[in-house]
Structure formats: C-alpha cells, structure tokens
Amino acid sequence: MPTYTSALLCAVGVFLLYNFVHSVRRNKVVARIPGPKPSSWLYGSLPELLFTKNYGEYEYQWQKTFGMTYRVRGCMGEDRVFTSDPVALRALFNNNKIFEITQYHRYLASILMGDSSVFGVEHAVHRRIRNVFNPAFTQSHIQTLLPALQSIATRLTGKLERDCSQVPDGRQFDIYEVIQYATSDVVAEAVMGYQFNSIETGGDEVSKNHHNVIALSSSRTKSALLADSLIPYVPRWIFRAALHLPMENSQGILRYQKVMRSWSNKLVKQKNENINLGIRTDGDLLSTIVGMNEDQKTSAHLKPDEIKHQIPSIMVAGQDTTGNTIAFALHELAQNLEWQKKVRAEILKVREFSNGELRDSDYDKLSYLNAHLKETLRFHAPLPITEREATEDTVLPLSKPVTATDGREITEIPLKKGEVVMCALASYNRNTDLWGEDADIFDAYRWLDERSKATAGRSTTIGPYANLASFLGGPHVCLGWRLAVLEAQIILAELVSKFSFEPVKGPAGIIHPAVAITLQPVSSEGVPHLPLRLKVLGHTSA
Image 1 (cartoon, rainbow, N blue to C red):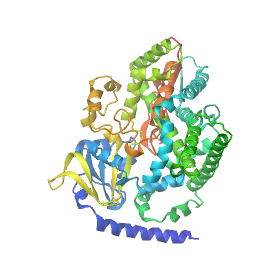
Image 2: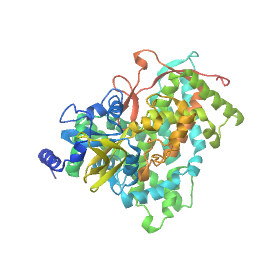
Image 3: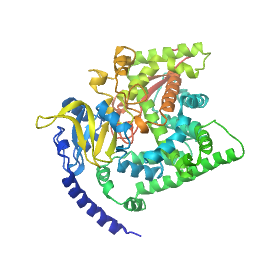
Image 4: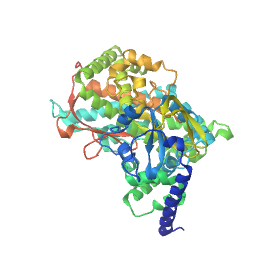
C-alpha cells in the first residue's frame, strides 16, 4: 500500500510536472485577452473572485471593465477564459462531447457521492442515467408531490408560529437553519419517501451527516484552489489515501460516505422489495425511478450503484441550493415592505378564491411572487460559477468579439485539449446587454414590464427557466429545476401569507452573499445565517 511519504513525493513531482506542461502548452491567444492583474503568482486572481466578503465584488466590476469575456489568471500563472457570453455559454453547456465537467469536479463528485454520480459522469453513462431519472422529474410527476410539499410548508409555519407565539409584537431570530431543515425534509419525503422530521427534531443521523458534509465542503481555502489546478495530474489513489489521514475534514467525509452508502442501499432495496411484492407506488420520486428502471430494456437498465449514487447527488442539489434561494428571497422581501405587502395581498386573494388552499395551477397565477422568485434567482445566482474542460482542440464561439491586448479582434477563441473555461453564471444574470443598465439592482418589477419581454425574445437562450443561467442548460441542466421552483413557490407563499418579515437593525442584521458550494447568506464572521424580525399575521392581514 502506498505510504503518505511517497504520496508527498508524488505531489511534489506533480507540481514540477504541472509547471513544465503548463509552460509548454500555454495558449498564446488566451494570453492576449485582456483581464484583471493577478494579486499573486501562486493563486492568481482566484482569491478576489472567490474569497471576497460579498461575492461578485470584483467579478461584476471586471465585467464592466473588460466585457463579457476576459482572461483570469489562475494558480501558478495559468490563464483561463472567463465568460458570461450567451453564445459561448450555450456552446459550453450544449456540446458535452467537446466540453466536459472538469476532472476536479468529477473527482469531488466521486468522493462525496459515488463514482456513478450524475455530477461526475459524461456521455453514454450520463445519458443512460438521465433517461431513467428525467421522466420522474417532468411537470406531471412533480405536480403529484403538491400535497407533500404543502404539508412540509405548513409544518414549517407551524413551528415558526409556536416560536413567535409568546411575542405578539414580533420576534427577532435567525431562521436560516429551519429553512434548510424544511428543504431537507422536502428531498427526504417527496423524492426519497423517507422521514427526516428535520423541522421538528433537527433530523436523524443521515440528515445530520449531510448537513455536516455540506458545511465541510463549503469551507473554501487557498489549498483547495491549488488542488483544483493539480488534480488532473495527480493519481486518484493519493486523494483516496488522504481521506484516511487523522484530520477532522477527512474523517467527516469518511463518516458521510459510510452513512450515505448504508442509507442509499436501504432505500433502493426497500423500493425493489415493494416492486417484487407487486406494490407499485408513485408517492415519491425514487419509487417511480426504481419502477421505471425495472421496465427498461437490458441495455438501458441502470446498475444498482447508478441509482444509489444519485441519492446523495439529489440531496446536495435539492436541499442546499433551494434552501439558500428561499433564504435570499425572504431577505429581499424584508428590504421592501411595500413590495412584500403586494406579494402577500395577491397570495391571500388567490387563496380566497381557492377556498383557502392553493391548487397546483394557482401558483403560476401569483405574478408578484413569481416575479420575486425569478429576480432572486437572477440576482443571487445559486451556482455563481461552473467550469468546463475541453476534451480536444477546439474553438469557443462568441456573440461579441474581444479586442486583444495587441489591438486585434478575436471573434472565436481557440482552446487546447485540457484547457478549462470558467462559466460566469452570476455575471450572465447581471449582464447589462441582457438585463438592461439596471442589472445590478434587485427589481422584481422587471419581470412585470417590458424588460422581461425583451430578454425572453432573444434567440440565444441558456436555461430552462426565464432565460436565467441559474439552472445551467444543455445535457447537464439541473435535473430537479421544476421541483425547486414549485418548492420555493409553496414555501414562500405559505410563509408570506402567515408572517411579516422585517430586517434586523444594526451589525447583527447584516448578511453577505458568499460562495461555497452554492451562494449562501453569511454573517461578517462567515457563518451561514438569516436574521429577520418575524410577526404572526391575522388571516385578513395584507
């Protein structure tokens, strides 16, 4: 078995090899693209990009200075293309034969979720997995989950009402954690057919391990930046060996692997046993998926691991991302009380015509709520940046040419095999060419006037929802985007109709949008939080 000493020596060798290969393969065209001056050779401009107190502090200014496409210096002098150009993003997302998920992210997905995770596979394997999973996430199937989602939203408001019951004038507290508990319960109950009861109890061993590993993975360090650059040149056994080091993070990941594998095995075994007994239920999406897999022909049939490894993948995507979107939506509602009243009045009016309970068709009628949700997804992009790696020498098309440092115009960027392109999703969502000169302002009214019509009419669209990049696009489009939208609609409608939300004054009420795995609201100390002042409303309040 390799020793840790040999692993260290190998890492040093890889570092030297990386520098040699990088110097030989440097892309001269990319080197001529303007971009920000790096703060250091070792880390480039990545600390300014990723570690600022408010995400986008530098990035959005860079876009104003250099345009939609520019060069960012990565670790150890590596040049990377950084783009929010819609034509470039469409090519990067739609052609996964030429532009793949990076090796770093495939490694990370295999460690946290399993070798067959949909986040870490490509081509034929990816298509087979999506072919079985996609039908369960269609609009018709998602609508069957409405009662379960409404029940969880009611449990959430019930808990908050109890917490506020002794303070009729309103209570100030941090509701970030309970929002995450609610979205965790949604994934467990609606998708997996399992009870976490996180809202009431904080969850069981599975949910607690999940929250712990999310917290571990959210801790961004400069060493992680170096790992991102070096991983393509490092044998996998080094990273597997590193998991057994006596370090808190490594041990936390090992515990997570053990717990999630046991839970995934139990869930899939239970669904298969039900099918063998002739019990076919569509009460949760996993039952639907396992049943559909049994109906597949041999060539399309998924292996057990190809189903099991999607369970932690869906947990990560479904709980953390949607929870943070709901948190930012509540934060923005608290900043504009008049707008909040309009959103609430519309919800109560539609609810009155539905005898107090919103139907599945009612949620799309909530024009103010949906405008607010779209603006939240635009302004606080859940995944600010993703990356794609060229599998062969190719060119990246652009909608707007780039003027190189020597004055020449670049209309398409030649890329060498192995080069990584940074896809600027948050910058796309604030691109003034798409969203107007006020793109840096949170204004939900843009979805109710002519501005949204101008964006919707563009020929180059990216994502499946409102032409936003928030759910990606192409073959790797977010599997559960419809569930995420409906979940946010239901939880926000329930919360806004029962409570008023006001900002907390002073330093304690300040939140910063910080990027970890996803964008999340954090305190000045970097701890995820959402401090708000809540007041229980009467049924006639508007």
